[in-house]
Length: 515
Image 1 (spheres, helix red, strand yellow):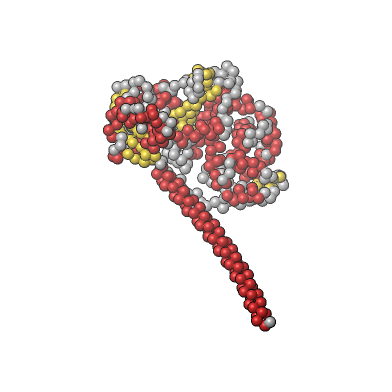
Image 2: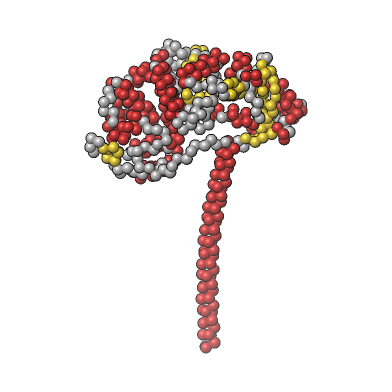
């Protein structure tokens, strides 16, 4: 029974991944797909309605088992997986009738409306950005109790201690600075190892925070080269200032994105030149930096540049939310009770993890996910025997796509191998046995600094420009050769005509002399 349920879950997951928006039912999908040769003992009654599936998936034990398995698998290749985490939330429209998660919220909307809050604790791993836990809470602002609750859940359930929090302005509250300040930035764990316990949060521009006074304090240094640095093609001002927030000692990293601020000011000034000319010097100075000014309080003593790089890494995690919403349609949530709603959310999180891994592996094909799925749909197979699938000759596009992905085209697949890979799973470090591969051995995944990434991008850009220049040069030389040949032909033609005319004149002269 457990295996049947596992097969059902995989069937639903694969359907959602590759159906490309088609409204096909899961039962019909299974009948048409190669999975029908493997899932021979599955009950089609499990595929008639997704509510049964989502209800079973809502069990907290399933969530715990999934994330424990995920962490175990990830740590085979990345032993530090799960060390740093970032907490964020995304609103769920309250379309579910009598949804117990509903709460009044205005986060991310134009006005207040009934919404649910989905809070995911995200792993701040530069290579994976994979979530290792999530909770659903009926709240609009995440406070100290929420952070403590999630931290305790992750530690007690997964044996993971969260050592780093990079958060947006909604978390900047007195209780947060009580938990994280300069006096408790490190701790000693159970193995007597000293570890960091750090926090970075964006300071809101509201009363109670020295948002404006920090600008005044740092203003004399804004155009000093000592405080300037470059990051991601932008020039920043950055200064570290020791401050007290609600009575707790913190570090304030004061920044101005000069590139962004100057660009916006230039656009604004083209339409408001008269207003600009009427401003006082101090107001003009503020307008030159206000669109790039922000402050990050934290409890770790580091350079402003390092703090900014650490904080900006949270944007990579937000891509997970974007994929969930834009590609997999995690929203809107239209389930009618607590259990199916929880199961739907859990399913969508698993689906997003698989989808992103799938997209990463298929990136060499240079095709969109939808295009790749449609392309591979045309590759047909049939059951040649009870143990083997015969594959038809794929179309040219399918064959070219397989070559880009590093695979040769197999003539057959053994059902036992396919069943083992789909139902039992394969290690992340091993290439599937169902296809003979020409892939080169996997290189060790090394962390790459943002500077190295940007240098690689710049080199690729220069190479593209050189290639385009060479192509233009070849085209220009080709055009010049054509014009030269055309001119030579025209000159030769004029020469021949002149020569014939001269010969006729000479002949006529001789005839006249003879007469």
